Amino acid sequence: MYRFTNRVSRNFNKSNSNQKQQAQQENDGTNPVQKNSQLERVVIITDYDSGEPVTLKLELFKTDRIDCYKVFVDGRLWKERIGWSNILIGIRKALPRLLRVLMTIIRS
Image 1 (cartoon, rainbow, N blue to C red):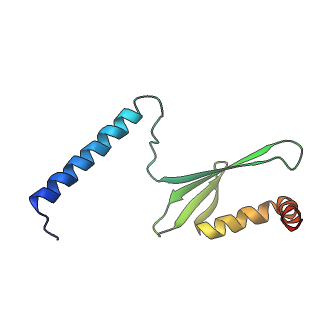
Image 2 (tube, helix red, strand yellow):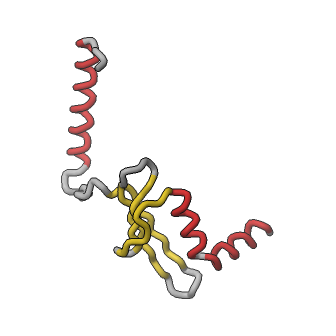
Image 3 (cartoon, helix red, strand yellow):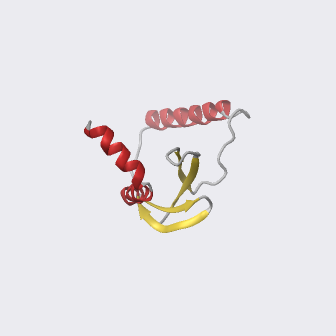
């Protein structure tokens, strides 16, 4: 355990209480606070490629490993534990036509 001087402890307590007060002022009913602390990220994908917009919602929850997530797609479990780069690979493979369109735009 590290020992801190009284001055450092006072500054830390002040900054911590200031952050809590600012967070309470920002969330005075204007923005609802997430109740689920396990939820890390939400990725919303809207695909306009098929003529009608198709929206997918990926919810990424904490797991026991760093930088790994439990992923739900539209409320259904996709992977129990998967890393961020593999999530992006899965999205890329799920939308292959969109990737081809993007690659033709990049090449030209």
